[in-house]
Image (cartoon, rainbow, N blue to C red; front, side, top):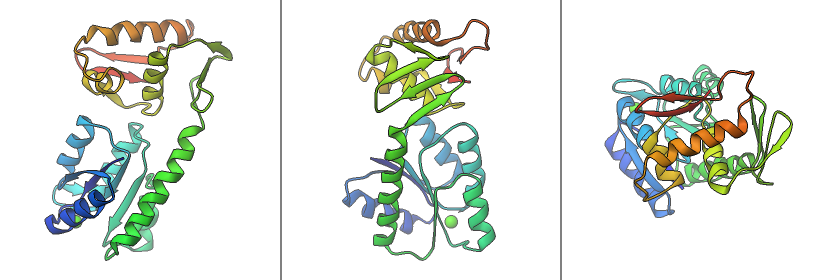
Length: 219
Ligand code: CA
């Protein structure tokens, strides 16, 4: 499980990195909004622990950006700002949980475990978007009511997009997850055209946007 910790106080960041690391989480640490954006572009993560007061901006703005572009992994806000208004705006913007500082490591770990557990249950459920229905538990896909036959790689690719609706996925990001270690980048385009052919409804707007030289986005 990979966790992105966004925390500008170096000592607290290190404390979290160590505490989570000892429980076998892989932790990456970002100290600014800019670093957090970069970290999330470079690789995916299973949860984010987010401080609000950051040197170059407000964690709530980051959260708003992430949710707007479809990032749907759990986010736990960890902040000294614990007024009811702050909590409500955090939750309204799509945070899953809110833990005020100061906190105990054990308490934080319990919150993280709970979030990840809840999220994995959600992940087993159906994902539906624009007439595409992806059943992760049953490993089946229906498009506009009709069953669609996908290979396992096509399924994995579609799942990656449906877990990140509206988010631009770079070619490297996709390739790392679907074909780890493989360098043939044309493979992705071949698979994208297969997915389009199998899923897109000729009358509707395209399901996938091509961002030339960058990657793809599920619209
Ligand atoms: Ca701070």
